[in-house]
Length: 219
Image: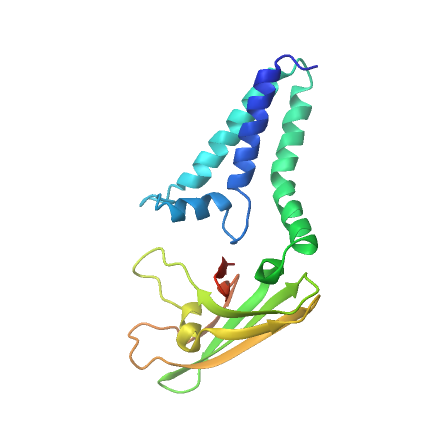
């Protein structure tokens, strides 16, 4: 079945590199982007090209090429198996690690899909913001951390919304061992000195930053 062990090993190494680059830990972004930020490598170009994503995809395609060349037959089966592993393995590995080995904030799972913030003006100069953030502590020990909000801006015309919640950040959060918890954060924001600001609305897929000691996670 195996035609070339050398090509097979090359395929495995390239596949692992691609998988590590896409591993969503310790931050929500792929690990490759985290490394790129540390070394000040550009992640995106001015016209929207995603350098890390393109590099990861190129390495994955190369691993599939060497994999199929290393086998005498079952090329399509090998391709489909590799594709399924690439799609589902990172999430499964992360979940297993957090549930069985992680400690402190590393064991905290943040569900951004069900977390949301709502805003409304209470008077001419005050905006009320309330966020409900869903967490689960997979460890058996209590976890304490501080929380602040993070919002990406892709152009100068983008108007901040969620980032306005940082007027009283950082917020203290405590989650008991094995606890699922919806953390509610409510604050009044003085917008009298902000020229362009939201007057109401809601936001989902909230990006946050949690800190505990020297440990930082961008979720």
